[in-house]
Image (cartoon, rainbow, N blue to C red):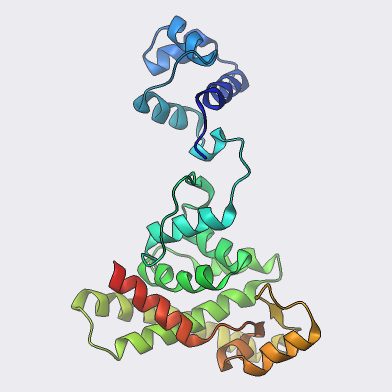
Length: 256
């Protein structure tokens, strides 16, 4: 839910005191009288939209800092991915924007950590559309601290497969250009990984359980038996298939 007037007032007062600013100092920066700021901080008034944006800039905080409600990380991520190009996803109302996820790399990393079929496959169009802005090595390094770096390699492999499938169909020139550029970067990353893989023992590592429904050894064995060659290559235990990424990429293109 959006923050209430009282929540905004309390947070502004807290931020002001953390900066050791008086009401006079803050009111001057916001272009309003000290008495008016006092009224707002006591819950008897509201900031204008322009003043609220100024507050976000002055204190370098996001809108989500003004809500006492526990964040819904899946909903936040879904909205961010929709804005970043996964246009087949529906933006959810009543969800505050997350400043933490606005960077493409952060959104990709969060999607791979949270999992969930719709969000994971939605990372494919986001990667393609922002291929020159995303640093795959940086994302991999951060995921490696959690032991989840193989998830990125698996995503890159599936996305490259989806791009090749899409390039085999009739496409608008702009999309064909985007896909070709993305494939160059994705394939370069895969070539590097293949070289690294030959010199490592990654194949001996236990499977990374991406799917949340895998709770027993029998379920794990069943999932692994049906897993795709790409999933087996990277040791990812998931029911997701390469075609799921093709479908997500195509749906985002056709919805955009």
